[in-house]
Length: 366
Image (tube, rainbow, N blue to C red; front, side):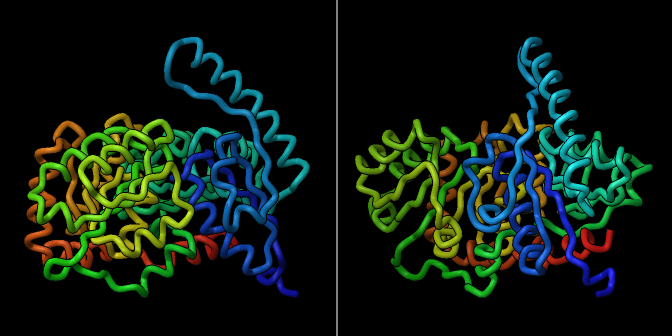
């Protein structure tokens, strides 16, 4: 058996939120299909995402902490990171992986740092258009930096030679959407709107979207159907808001079949996390993106701006995301549906193709 055909042990290290987990899941799918062993190192939040390929891999959690908030929280974060560093060193000594791949988030830092100290090949993948803080700390220590966007900000000049632009890996259930054409709005037909605030939810969507739809003329409002993923605490109030205005709406804290709902959407209203943006690009679906204003280094703004620049959708700041402004956009889209069809085609310009396969090749060649 040649070295290139030998089965390898790959450790994936990631923060436990959807934006970090989904690209790791996409890479895991490819590696498992090729017969390699995959171990995931993450934090306790991952329990919400143990599905798909990641339900079939060994999962280990390490301590971490937050570095925002009160001085006490920051001190606890530093202590948690220290514990995580010790755990990661023991783990790397025990596993002896061939490669360690980091997907950002502070929980990824201990594993990548430990691997670099032990001279284990290391790669980081950056989902967003701004290099995240954990990845910034690791950039000088790792061998390669895989990026999603062509022009990733906050990369030091000395590290730019490590960059390979591969796009953002998406799950196989999303990749299937490439073959499903966008269904435009026809005549007086139904208008399917998908609303999602990402894995963290977005209370503002639960308030503004029903109010905006309520402000539409009755003949337009009657054509709308909504699938809305929102925070658990907002589910009942959001469901009631749509019931009051007579709009057919399916409301839940989490949709396990979100790719199917994305396939049928005429318009998406969403935050601008990298996974969301690239899933829209792969599917070719138009979107209104409302960046989370508190996102680290304002990275969601830059993600949304990149999507808007290719003509795939429209960036609306949270301050400008009002019921009146959204209602005006919805009315314009419904009465001139070709606008959405053009945006759907343009969205595909951000699709980098086989990002997961390309990342797998990089990993296996490290």
